[in-house]
Length: 331
Image (tube, rainbow, N blue to C red; front, side):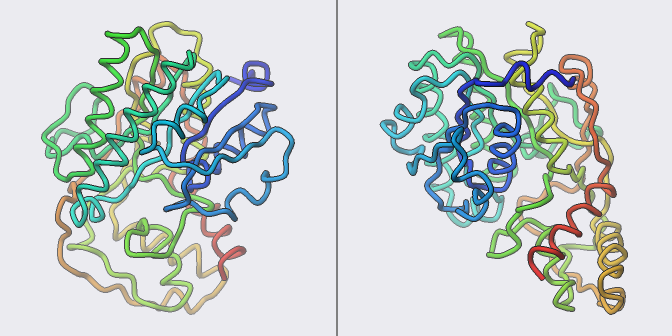
């Protein structure tokens, strides 16, 4: 578990979407392990400040480009040992409002990256899949081989990624691993904009003494997953020597569910340590949101068995860390 440095030191690793929330955290971690990191980003949802700590590092290179452009993908994949493909247009509501752009980036861009990585003889292609793929399946916990019908254009795009990855193994013997992220949160996650994720959005509202709006009655639940668990899963996927572990899709989560009501209660409690007035902020309840899955809980047995995954942070432990980061960086 602790030999990541031995396995990744001096390796050339491309991180697409490397200026984004998850991508920039991965870039930092890989640099700390001695890897040579190339970031490909068009800054449509990523931020230059996310790369501030590594932008001048001798092992870091930034390519401004778009995964919708095959030539940009080919240029970025040159001489790479591994690819961590994080570039995508996230957000269910965004995909409902603009399904065409979501498809262009998440499907067309994904296929461009697969082709470019295959042609560059990349050894392994690890990509961000999504828990949204479970769609209308009501079974809990979510197990990788049991999915339902997608409930949004975004979910369709992420499922198509998995289908393409599988075909590339069968047709071209190209090795991939998909990581179905479950509601990732933590440092550097953007709290602003129409499609901000729920945790940073609620944190910012509470810090400003504004009432957070919960969609529905607040009893929908999610398997909120702290960023360090996601980093660990990516490192395990990159370095696994277990031949069975490759060409698989894994839930990437903690394996515990939290209702939105409990989430807000926890946020108010942890933020009150910095500002006692936050405890008094009222919550507002709005309408249910189209495309939302009512409950999400991951089985992480497959990741434990094939990748030896042992998550580091529970939701509450991660939330305390995230709250501290937001308070120190955004207040």
